[in-house]
Image (tube, rainbow, N blue to C red; front, top):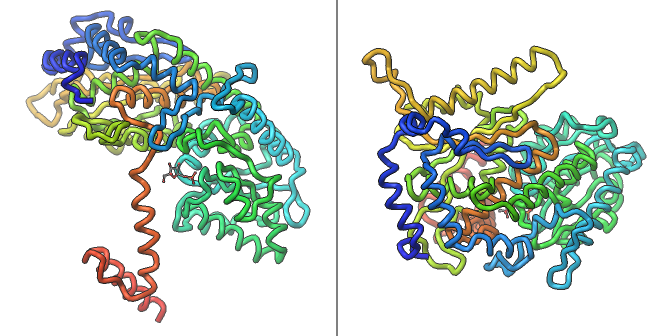
Amino acid sequence: MNSGDIKAWVDLQAHAEEMQSQHLSELFQSEESRFDMFSFAAEHFLLDLSKQRITKQTLAKLTALAEQQELSEWIEKLFTGEQVNVSEGRSALHTALRLPKEDALQVNGQAITKDVHASLEKMESLVRQIQQGQWRGFDGRPIRSIVNIGVGGSNLGPLMACDALEQYTPIESQQLDVHFVSSMDGSELEKLLPMLDPATTLFIVASKTFTTIDTLANANTAREWLLKASGKPIELINQHHFIAATGNIELAQKWGIPERNQLLFWDWVGGRYSLWSVIGLPIALKVGMDNFRAILKGAHAMDVHFREASFDKNLPVLLGLIGVWNINFLNIHAHAILPYDGRLTHFPSYLQQLEMESNGKSVNGKGERLNYRTCPVLWGEVGSNAQHAFYQLLHQGTELVMCDFITAAVRYEGEGDELQQQHQLSLANCLAQSRLLALGAESTTDLSYQHYDGNQPSTTIMLDELTPETFGGLVALYEHKVFVQSVIWEINPFDQWGVEKGKKIALSLSTEFKSEVGEHLDSSTKGLIQHVQANRGQYEN
Ligand code: F6P
């Protein structure tokens, strides 16, 4: 689209000019009931937008933009399996992964719900065998350690979920320890392998494509370790120590993983949308299959809300539109994710992939260049830790930053006063920071370094409690937020061509380290390779 051709966009630009001069402290003074006006509740969530630089008019204009961009139609296309991923000719049906059994969905001749539940059942059967000690390693002892080898979407979701929901580990899983390995350079394996017993360790090779070099390199190292430690044939090692969670059965098979150990998902599940599929196996092993199903249930409740609620009450729609307002109309291009809950440590990095790999694009679905900004730079950290690291910039720097504060109203019920007090302390800090960022504070002296400008907008997302269900809902909330923004920006959020070229160049460069450096290379790349070669020589001598 040319933004100038969209009436609601032009309208918002004019409105933004008026709003630019308004300070959040003035908005709070003039509208006493801002919290009532701009907080929205649904599905165990409260979304407080009152600290955003908006009025009722802003929201009306934003929802008009959503209507003009045919958001309702796009939501239906998403849920019904139309090929919304146009560049790859695929549907994006992650919502189907959390459909209850009785909600039959059929797309292009595939009985989606039936296949999804069959795959969940195969996963459940593997989980039970492992939990009950029936899955045995090469010397007949039961498996005790699980190592998930995967990267990006095949790592970040399961890692985040296992950490966030650790307290829900059922008795059957308590004897299992679950680890994650992603880095291409082998750093994690180098540290982890000496601590594990090869005979009782099971590796999950998690890769949608089964071509990702990072994952294959780690899987090969792991297998060599097992072969050396056991002295057993490779077939036996593959059979007892490797499971594949993949969309590419042929390559998994070729690598040596037998059919019994293959868990399948489909090309209509994007990597960064795959934690609900068999990629969630480590989650199910850690928190149990019942809790895994509860995660799906919570996400499904958010799906239903997203599909059915009117835009002015729809949490993912509102969250997405607020982002558009900040980015395209208030010119804010940095976004901090600040969970005030140590269990959500990995949530910012999960969202980095979800948001930036989905919407970090400058052409529309038809391949035309866009004349407006899209996904901002997104980063984050557990809020209370970030206070001691980068909040200085949020409060007194020169950058405009929008923040998402995420917290749970209730925690540690019945677990002792000290912990409850710590939770309250954390909540108090969360509220204090968002308040100060919004309202600012005059210096009591004439020292300018004691002055806080404020006017940094933020959203607070408050979960009733962090449970498997609300965790599922929280992740689905952000998935849909990203989709809403992609519709406004006319982006295809389900491809990631921007990450392909670098992989190819790396493949061709990796041979250069062993030989005479090619003349065709630029001087920097050539110089750096030669520097490595020179150092390597010295080290070996
Ligand atoms: O390189 C990016 C990417 O393709 C992500 O989209 C994906 O989540 C990750 O790599 C891992 O891919 P795979 O699951 O196919 O190994």
